[in-house]
Each structure stands twice: as C-alpha cells, then as structure tokens.
Amino acid sequence: MKQTTKAILLKGMQIMAEGKKIENGYLKIRDMQIIGYGPLGDEDSTEGFEVIDVPASFTAVPGLIDIHIHGVNGADVMDASPEALDNMSTALPREGTTSFLATTMTQSNTAIENALENAGNYISQGQEPGKAEILGVHLEGPFVNPKMAGAQPVQHIVDSNLGLFKKWNALAKEHIKVVTIAPEQPGGLDLVKYLKENRIIASIGHSHATYEEVVKAIEAGASQVTHLFNQMRGLHHREPGVVGAAFLHDELTAEMIADGVHVRPEMVKLAYKNKGRDRLILITDSMRAKCLKNGVYDLGGQAVTVADGKALLHDGTLAGSILKLGQGLKNMVEFSGCSLEDAIHMTSVNPAKQLNIYERKGSISIGKDADIVILDEHLDVFMTFCRGELAYQQGGEEK
Image (cartoon, rainbow, N blue to C red):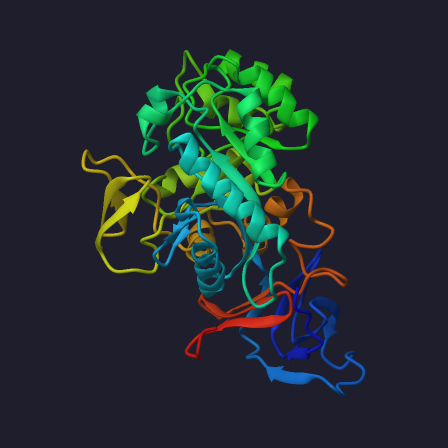
C-alpha cells in the first residue's frame, strides 16, 4: 500500500477532539496519523509541515463512518468490479465519509458471491490514503423476511443458511462485518449465534419479528438493528415489535436514515430521546444515484426512479436513499436538537466502537488515523482528509 510521509498542520479552527472541544486550535498530521493537537501556541515546531490556515468559525471533526451504503456516483457494490468500489471510495469524501462498509443486497447467489469476492480482494490488496477506506462488508439479505422485503427482490430471499454464509465469508476473505438478518425466519437464531461467536455483528432488519422473538435474538447475540423503523414490525401498544424492542434494550444499537424521508423528523427525535447518542448510528443506505441527476437507475436489477429527493420502485416502495452522510449529520442536529458533539457520536464514535476499530478511527486522538473533516459554520463539508491526505476541498479540484 502507498504510504505518505507528508506532514500537514491545520490551524485556527475549532476542534471536536476526543472528550473535549478546543477553540482556535491546531492539528498535526504525519504518516497517515494524528500526531498532535491542542490550542494554537502549543504546536512547537512547524518546520517541515505544510501549513493550512482554517477560519476560526470552522470545526474539525473525526471522519464520518457509513456502515450501510450500497452505492454513490453511478457505482454500486453489486457491480462487483474494483472500478465501482474505487469510484465509491473517491466520491464519498465529498460528504465527509472517510470509511464505510460495502453493502450488498438480496440477489442471486452468483451475484452476491461475485460482489463478495470482489470486495474481499479489493480490501485485501490494500487501499491508498486519500480515499474513503472500505472497512469490510455489510451483507444485507438474502436472509430476511419476505413480508418485509422492501426493495430486496423477494424471489431471491432465502432462509438463513450457516453453510452458505461460511462459504460467502470465505469468498469475502473473512471481511464480512455485519449481517442484516430476520431472526424469526428458519435458521435465523442459529446464524445469529454463529455470528456472535465469530465477532460478526448480527443486525435485525427486514424483519417481522415480535418483541419476544427479538428478545430471543438478543439472547442469541444480536446487537444491532438495521435502518430503524424501515421494513420492520413497528411499535404497537399490544405488540412492541422490533421498534419497541430496540427502544427498550440497550444491547441493541440502531442504524437510522436521518433524511426526513425514510424517517420523518419527529420520529428521528423520538428515536434520539429513547436511544440517546450512544445507541444510534446514522447511515445513508444510499444507492448509485446519489450525486447524480434525477432519472431512472438500477438497484439489484430493479428500475428505481429518483426525483424530489426520493428513490422509488415502480410501486412507490422506497429503494434506498440519495442521502449524503454529512447532510444526515446536519439533519440530526436540526431534527432532534442534539449538539454537534452528540451528532459526531452517531456518525463517527459509535460506528467505530460497533466495528471494534475505535483504537484507530472514530475520534480525533493522537495515534489514530488522520481521518479529519472540516465543517464550515453551516456544518457543510469544507475539507476532508482520508488517512492524512486531502481527499476533497470545497471549490477545489477533486481527486
């Protein structure tokens, strides 16, 4: 993998560092890592550093981590090509995303296997700094409930199959990190137990499970809920369902699409009040049309019409989003009234901890990867560094 020895000093902005906020601060980057930060005046020598002055009204935050994304900029994980993954890795820093899980969807076994093998090879061959890093694979489907298929093609949905999963994870070079599963389906609990034993996140999603069935899944090792509220048994006063279980059980961390379309703002606020900043992870669940014009695009062999900020199948079913994660962060602050620090927990800290990589990502701390996003005074992405290299600058030439 290409290494960088470039040294960069960012100075003048606010810094949302791990555990504290610094006004008029500095950040030092070298060899892909954060090597120092603090208030201006404490930075010692600047010799050998490229100095970048940043307005005092701007804020440095840790890079955003998207654990559920299918595509962007015309590319999709199911394209099963290194060019598609490279396109995604290059495009995502525009929205502040510095790392992500390449997310598959329900398709034929052959299509899934091609996508998994491609992702496994791409990750294993090493990734250059200056692009969003693929941290692994999120297997969404086909082990889901046909009653809650959403945009997952029903004809390819199958019961949970431990032997098939083992084969797939081997094809992915053991890089599957999250599996979305309907635990109430045949074989579901057995797969959840296996995932837990092998340090893979079992995420309840596209599920019609009752509250009691979710409790059994938690006991078996489920620790996450896929896109809270969407394609799951909802909250009812006589049947709490998946949503009620997610609200009541701290064992479950919940993904959420904060675009105001998949989940209206009031429900985003309700989720925040119930789960708090430490048990929510903002995701995009975006498809290839993100960053492109309105039109008709493909999602798993299905025609998706994108218009007015929505991506819909022909019957009106939501088919992923076109949300940018940086916008999701802004929306979370607006919809819930949470602080920027709280939103950073939901976009950076929590996904890093959930993936067990907090020792190197998820916060601004010495020794961690230099995944840094500079937000302007409107919380829009101004500049993104991926492992120490500038990957995007507002108004500048993109890589």
